[in-house]
Length: 382
Image (cartoon, rainbow, N blue to C red; front, side, top):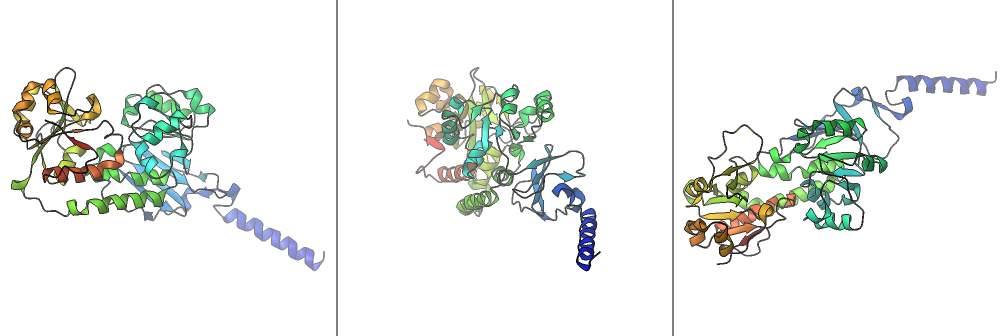
């Protein structure tokens, strides 16, 4: 055998030996044990999720919502070997997503990832997010059924890559199981459980990670926090706090209010106000963020409120004191009505998840007698 041939044989043997020792060599795969995950995405307010990174991979952990291993964009790696049970593998960015949690759409729009959403659990007529409504109008996003009755055939035939649900899916565990059984990972949105309302806004970082828009998400979040720094830095004395009631009246005449500790009541506190119904619902164990009161109980708790805000998202926006009076004449006894401090939110408020900072600023403004340039609040006309 010639010297050149011998050298070539040795070279091939060395290559073979290295391939056997490398945990990344088999079919371009990576062994989970080789991932250190020693870099965490900094979170200022959110506590319901975390993101850890290692060599282009991300491990997303959602409290009571599962763990997801995100493989890096591009590259030759197919899958990760020896992944512990309970961790779902997904390649990012997510594509052909079935978006059921309507509150997530605004995050997706703000980070420029609308083209990665293919299916909606909300019909076109019910969207207040214009990007979503327009995408459905031209067929870029298809209605695939509500959370409890998805169109499995449509999702499968169009290559659905993942489903983003809200916690209502836990009331239909068989649907979640079926989606996962047919190969569609289910990610459950839990931002509503953030104790700090700005933690809810910080979930945009999670969606930035899922959709490969990390930079866009970080820049948007930091920009919103900068806008409200003047409000957050204020020191509010207890004696100077304005009492604010946030509510709507149901078709049966009951009053639906936010519970103590809900993100709306916490936003009121951050703005320097005091939630007028602070003692209501604080001891209840269910996860709902609202509760119904009789009008008599509401009257007793809120009649002396400095400001009242009618939640127009559910029953429709109202524009005048006259409309409020027609809902119930007893509103005319309220201090806030008498002093001209009654407001309504628009029907788009809860779908526009990224408007929390703006809403906080507006709460601060109306407490200080400034009704100019309001987007989410509208002062009721006399």
